[in-house]
Length: 57
Image (cartoon, rainbow, N blue to C red; front, side, top):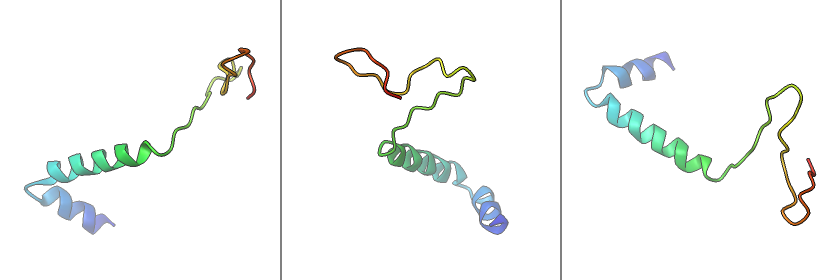
């Protein structure tokens, strides 16, 4: 793994590979949508019923 990273960084066009990687990760992230409440008190609801306003999660 270190050899691959070293070859990429030693390449003249490493920034193009980095940009392509970021675009690929962004594209793949569109298929996985998640909301995470990292507060200790869990004050932000994860799922809200739009019609009644009740929290379900």
